[in-house]
Amino acid sequence: MNRLFKWLKQEIVEMLPSVLFFFVVLNLMRWIENLFLEDKGVSVGGFVHVSIGALIVGKALLVADLLPVVNAFRSRPLIYNTLWKTFIYSLAAFLFRAGEEFAPLAVEAGSLSAGFERCLAEVHWPKFWAVQVFLGMMLFIFVASMEFIGAVGAAKARQLFFGR
Image 1 (cartoon, rainbow, N blue to C red):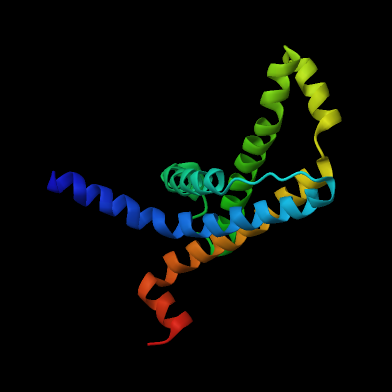
Image 2: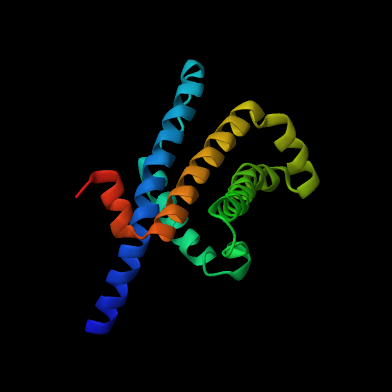
């Protein structure tokens, strides 16, 4: 039992920075989406949905970092790995978000092609891309921060930001 508790504690400590970051980012994104839709009387709500999403993203990033392809530029200057990871994470976020829009429409339409046509016609694409760009920028900030902290060490990063 003690070993399980230590493992669980380690997982939570490793996940905490990304979960907190994406908890704030996803809630900010949800707030922006609600602002976009406010004049139409629509609310996308979902504090619990966003909180679960932050947990999923936090764990997914930890798992993804274990894949060799994600750290392809580990021996190069930080910008290479930062841009590469941002691209990979943004692509994954795009695929997930597009699937989130497409799947219900495909199920309702009864076929993939009909669902794709409905998706193209019914999704509010400017909002979709605005959120995607915002998420990409936030992913860049997150990845750049994590790469920087990994390079200088957590203690040194804390000292640089907050002093002694």
